[in-house]
Image 1 (tube, helix red, strand yellow):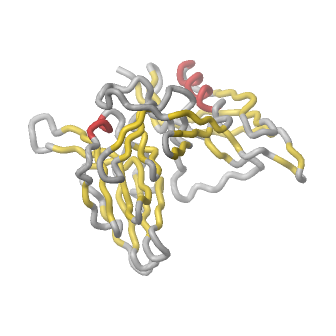
Image 2: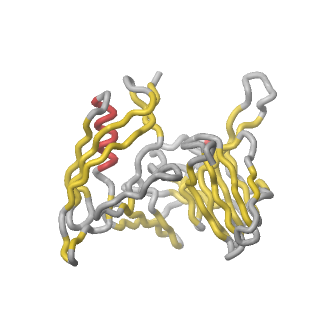
Image 3: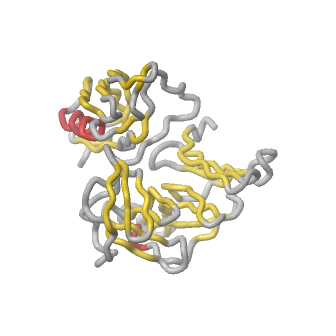
Length: 282
């Protein structure tokens, strides 16, 4: 557990079948911890040269998406390709034969039973027979989304819905990146105290900056309104103005359960330190 302190996904197929993804951290090595007998025994499978971006249940099976490195024995050390694989027990996995090549730009993730996001404007469904593609209109798409028929809805500071369109060129480089996801803290982290309960608090797992690099701790302050939206946000102790602005811009889109006290709506001010991973741009 010391090697894999993060548990980004947990999926159960039945009272006796459950699989957990254990990870070293964002964009790092991870594997599947699975049980088929209600936790009496467990198996761990660490798929070689892969990165797991999502795990979910579809039609009674586990499905995992992400990427894998192929051709490691060739000159140059190999290259990454998209991965989509399914399993009935969490220990034995089969790669899909459906087309997933359009996932190579960002590795399909943020999935539900209707498909996965390949970018901020492309929905791809390779879970059911032949792969299907749908165009997502540009707008306020977040990691909290759902679709039914030709309609897609997303949760931001409100619920917004739009009609899905026909994808014209699924192989084209996306103009809109995939929305950011909310990252989970490592196991053993004490739960947050107070009146705020997050609904959607996405923050990039890794930031790119021209000045800073490494693990950076910043001090944030939030003013949350009675409707759960962020009315004001500040970021302090950041090593660069660019990083400050990037974190701030993501914080103001956060959404919380409407805070209350003794049954009455209230505004809440919250301060905390958060640590982010930063790499310097070339």
